Structures are given as C-alpha cells and as structure tokens.
Amino acid sequence: MLNGVFVALVLSSVAIGALFGTMEGVADAAVESAVGAAKLALGLLGQMTLWLGLVRILQEAGLMAALARALSPVMRPLFPGLPPGDPAFGAILLNLSANALGLTNAATPFGLKAMKELQRLQERPGVASDAMIVFVTLTASGVAVLPLGMIAVRSTMGAELPGAIILPSMGATLCSTLVGATLALGLSRWSSRPRSPVDAEPGGPADRSGPELAGLADAEQVATIERRTRPLRAALVGVCGVAVAVGFWTSVAGPQGTADGALDAFQIFSGRWLLPLLIAGFVGIGFARGVPVYDAFIRGAKEGFSVVILIVPYLVGILTAIGLFRACGALDALTTFLAPFLEPLGFPPEALPMALVRPLSGSAALGVVVDTIEAHGANSFVGTLVTVMNGSTDTTFYVLAVYFGSVRVQNVRHALLACLAADFTGVVVATALTHGFFG
Image 1 (cartoon, rainbow, N blue to C red):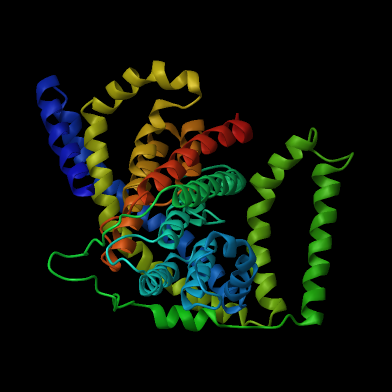
Image 2 (cartoon, rainbow, N blue to C red):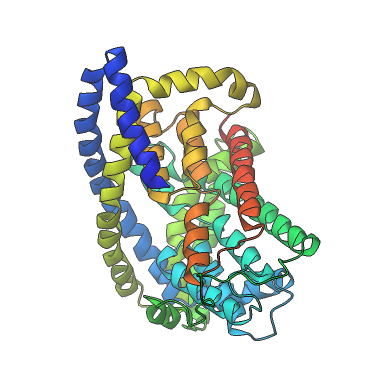
C-alpha cells in the first residue's frame, strides 16, 4: 500500500508541476528533501543513542519482567478463553511490556510468538480467533508509554520543550487502546465466527509451525532478568528524589515560585522538569537494582547506530515524495480546500496527512512529522500536534499484515474495524489534549 502512495505522490507532483508551472520548485525540492533527510538522520543519531542506552538500563534492571507481572491482572479479563499458564499469555504480556517501554525490536518477536501460540489453540485455521483480534488491536493501538522517538525529533529540530508531549501522548494512547480493546471484546461477544473453516492457502491448511522468530532468544533472555532492589542504594536514590521535590516546590510551585497557578506549574513540570527526571529515574532505577549502569548504557547505545542507518532510506524516500507534493502546490491547495470543514472542529488541515499516513507506515509517518515541523516550526501548534498524534497509535496495517500473515490468517473478522476505531480515537484525543496543554 505504501508503494502505491509513493508512486501517486511522485507522479502527481510532477504532472501538477508541469501543468501549473511549478517545475522549478519541484526540481529544487527533490534535492533539498533528500539532503534534509540525511541531515535529520545524523541529528537523530545522538538522541536515539541516548534513549536506547537508557532503556537498556531498565531492561537489565528487570523492569520488563516486573511490568509483565503488573499487567497480568489487567490483561487476564481481556483474554478469557486462554487457559491459565498458557505460553500465549506470557508472550502477550512480554510483547505489551516491551511496547510500553518503547522496545520495538523486542516487542515484534514476542508478538509473533504470541500469534504462533494463539494459532495452536485455534480451531479454525485461517480465521482470526477472539484472542488474536484483541491482542492485535492492543498492539496496533500503540501502548507505548514514552514517545522517545518524537522527543528525539523535537529536540533535533529545535523545540524549546522537547519533552512537553509526554503527558498528552500518554493520554492519547491510553484512550485509543481502551476504545480499541473495548470494541474488539464487544464485537467478539456479539458476532459469531464463520461456520466453515477458511484455509490460509488454497489446497491446504494453515501452517501451525509459525515463522522463524528472529531475535526471540535475545529478547527472552533479557525479559527473564530478575534483580532485587538494594536498600542502601535505593535510599540514596530516594534522597535525591526528595531533593528534587523540594527544589521544584521552592523554585516553581511554592508561594515564592515562578509558576502562576497550578496549571502553569504543571506545564512547567511536564515541559522542563519531566525529561531530566526521566533520565535520572532510569539511571537511579538501574543503580538501585545493582545494574552496572554505564556498561548497560553502552550496550544499548550501540543499537542507536543500526536504528538510524535503518531509517535513512525510508526518510529519504518519503520526504522526497512529500517535498515534491508540497513544492508543486498540491498540498497547499488540499489544505485550503479542507480548512472550512476541519478548522471548526479544532483540527488543523495541515495535520491531515499525518492522520492518514500513520496507520500505514511508521517510517512514512516520521517523514510527515519532519516535513510538517520544517514547514510550520517545532514549537507551532500543528508541529506539536503531529508529534502527539504519532505517539497515540501504531501502524495499524503493518501490524495486521505482519501478525496475521505470520500465522496465515486471511479472515481477520472485525479486527480492522477495532483497529481503525482506535486510530480515530487517537487522532481526536491527541487534538483535544494538544489544545488543552498548548492552546
């Protein structure tokens, strides 16, 4: 599907440029967009290295296993048909825990393993079970707690408060996940499955052996790390926490502080204090649990290079296509046409490409975010909104294709409807929260 989008953008941009005399701008955009994508990737290198190193500290502190245990009572009602102690439930919990920590490299192998185990329990090969639909909807709705990638982009592109999007992004993804899961459960109870099995491939049953899960062994090894908190170290971290709380009260929130009311104090905290506290919190958790913090940071930071190298081709491709579409004048014409319909709803038409592309591709969505920020500024309302929207959901069609394709399920039943409802909710709530936080 993304192939068709890329072809349509490039061909229509050149055709429109030829018809309306904007070919000079189209030609310039082709070069400038490619160079800009490479510069952006270089700027992201430091940010991604930092955050992947910090997240690795949490992994080696045993937080992933602890989070999976904490999620177990909440997730159990969503999968009533799974036998107690079934391997599928453990894989589901590890997938959601990895996503919550922003560990997509670990989340995908666990997700594929979960689908393989759910397929083992499936009575009708080729037809999505209720548990499969709920799990895929949870994954596609985007349960990431920290929008680390968008923080890195905002910091690289000059935002005054890169971490200010953390709380609205968390609120948006929570609402999208709740709506998607509720709809998936409700439709599963209301609808009935097809009476006859649907083979995954003509002439044969579905393959129950599942795919080769690259990276699963490493992910499972990290996920099983268990560490105990060391009291003396925890006490030292607690003293630092008390000092920070006192400092925030005296300098910002107290009677002599700089904040003008509780709302202003909250905005200052989320914009200026939360990001440094997160970094210190990651380090403090690792220290309190006996992790060799610096060594763990280096192990995670090394992944930053491979991540940035991986996204460069996608960035160059999608940013060039969007740059051509903007330079030919088509994007401005489209936003002008839609403005009377979207602006009364509080939704800027300039953010519409993000709402349309996000369910299709994460790399394309990143390109749209960068293009929007370059056009309107990192501190603009629309520039902030697209970063919050990016963190509210995940790439729906990619998740559906990879997860259901891994077990050769063709009949996804109401999974697409539940995922699209989550996407729509994410856009609506992201817009409302961005208005609330940033006006």
